[in-house]
Image (cartoon, rainbow, N blue to C red; front, side, top):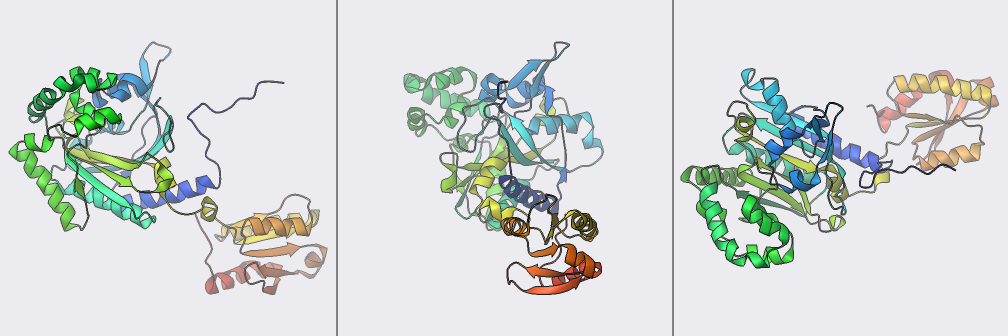
Length: 430
C-alpha cells in the first residue's frame, strides 16, 4: 500500500460546516468595509524576500525566524507572504497610485504563512482580512477604522471586547525613547530571556512585546513611550483618542502596547476578545499607522494606516454552531426511479434559475432514505416524485416544519414556490 499523504503540519483543511461560518464572517466583514469606501486588492502569495526584510524589519521575529523563504530556479530569494501590508505598499508604489488619487482605501482577504509555534487559533497557514488607507494624515481615520471594527464584531455577536490603544511615536521620538528604555533594561538584562537579551542590541522595543513571564514582570516598570513623544506626536495621539470618544468607543490607553512589525509609527491598536473559545490567543485584530513605510520602500512620502484581523480567531470567537450557517435548501426533490430523476433534474434546473436553492437526490435510494436526508439538510420543502406523480402531473409539496402538505401541478411548481416565498421565506440567491 502507498503511504497516506496528509496535509502539512499547521496548514489545515477547512470543511463544511465550518467553512459556512467562515463564509458568513468574511461576507459580513467585506460588505461593511465596502460601506466605508474600501475596495478589494489582491496581491501575489509569493513576493521578493527583500520586500519583507525591508518592510517588516530584519530584527523582527517574523523575518528572523518565521518566514517561508526559498530560492527560485534562477536563484532569486522568494518568500510566501507572512503579512499583507508590505505587499499592498509595494503595489501602491509599483502602480503609481499616488498620482491617480489623493486618498486610497483598500481591503484584502487571503492566506498568510509563518513558521511559528502553533496554538489554538494560530497556525502556519492562517487567514487575514485587513484594510489599508493611504493619503490621510489626520488621526480621525484610525479612530474610524477602530469604530468600523467595533461595529463588525458587535454585529457578529461578540460582546466582551476591549480596545487598547497606544502611540509608538515617529522617527524623531524613537531615539529618545530607545535611550530611556535601554537605560532601564540593561541593568536588568540577566533577568531577560535569551531572545530579549539579543533584542537589546537590535530592537529594544520588541522586549515590550515579549510574553515570557519574567520579561513581562521586568517590563512592567519600564518607562512609558508616551512620556517621550514630541508635541506633534502627542497631539496626534490625543486627536485619535478624542475621535474615539466622539464615536462612543470605549478604549484603554496601554503604554506597553507595541506591534511586532517595525514599520508602525504613531497610533497602534488592538482589540481583545474575552471569548473562552480563544484560550491565550485573545487578540483578534491589530493595526496602526505606518506613515514612513511607503517612503522607506521607494515611494513618495505618504501617510497610511491599517489593520489585519485573524479570520481563524474571529470565527472561533463568533457565537453560533457552524451547522446553522449552512444554507438550507428551499426544496428537496426526492425522485423514485430513472424517469422521475430525469424530470426532477429539469424541474431543479428551472427553479435554480429562478433563484431557489434546490437539492436533487441522484442516487437510486428509497423514499425513507431521501426524507431522512432532507431532514438532515434542513430542507424547507420536499416533493416526492414517482410514477404516479409523473402520470398525473401533480405531486405533494410538504412543508418540513409545519408538516402541511399541498397538491401542486408539476408544470406550476415554480409558481407555487413563489407563492410560498411571498408568504414565508424568500428564495435564497447568491
